[in-house]
Amino acid sequence: MSITVLKSAIRLRSICRLQRIQGHMMSSSAGPEVLLERVGNAGVITLNRPKALNALNLTMIRHIYPQLKKWDKDSEVDLVIIKGAGGKAFCAGGDIRAVTEAGKVGDPLAQDFFREEYILNYTIGTYQKPYVALIDGITMGGGVGLSVHGRFRVATEKTLFAMPETAIGLFPDVGGGYFLPRLQGKLGIFLALTGFRLRGRDVLRAGVATHFVESEKIGALEKDLTDLKSPSLSDVAEVLDSYQHQSGLDADKPFVLEQHIESINRLFDASSVEGIIDNLKKDGSPFAKKQAETLSKMSPTSMKLTLKQLQQGASMSLAEVLTMEYRLTHACMKGQDFYEGVRAVLIDKDQSPKWKPGTLEEISEQSVEDSFRSLGEHDLKL
Image (cartoon, rainbow, N blue to C red; front, side, top):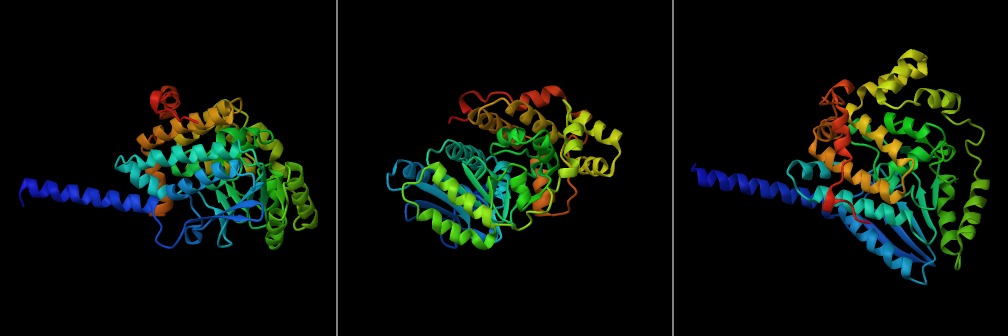
């Protein structure tokens, strides 16, 4: 085979690969991936990829964002409801596999995804009309971004909330740097570094959800919300409160972390990840040992970026946080751990990522600082 033919074959393979990536990120072969409809006086968004646990891709973002803008100006739309199809998940996260595939070959779709996702998160966070997220089922990563910045977040006994990004070489993005440090004490830092999973009523107790309603009542709740005529925020809150009062499931169970809150506030109160790990090792309690073991499996780089992200985000606006996080995505896309984490957790599923650098001590403060540096004209514009 001549060099020219070989080059052509390689180029063709690259083009085919790019087309596959773009197809994965952008297209739908099984009908609309997001349903947008008017029901009564409400705009209703249904994430419609149940087989993919409603994972958020660029096509969905590009449908939801303009529709939210449109409904905001529509005098006949009084509130927005967002939910997931299929009964298992609200939204299990962003379509990270597609993002890593695009990132590996330098396809701008990867950065387009983060940029447009964060613009959507900001739109939700600044939305003028009541915005109700029915987080009935798995709610992680990108699904948190679609819900937590809205005025109302309704958890059920089926809700499973987590920000597990340090396990895949990323950081708790979609505004995690804004809402996590605003949870009680050091709870946000604990959730961000360990990826700890909260379930059911505990999502409300942690301050992530605003209401808890039993899953079987969600249909009736949705109908009562769509039947409201020109509701104010307090009208919507009144309906949600009334449903919460009718939902007694697990009300007597204590918060899963109740007995550990004092320990979390003490052990995760350090200026560095090394300081936190040192606290955990010195404490030596079963809880502390378990957290130290969990952190030993996470990407050292991700943990360093995450702690600084939350420390800075605590005093930033949502817009400033999302701008900072967009800078961090560029750093992660240039690094190695994000691709390795996705390979180990989502693709090969061997759960044995080989992090580089492999220890906290090998990571210079300068490299962490560089990850937060302005992108100049490429910075996120909100």
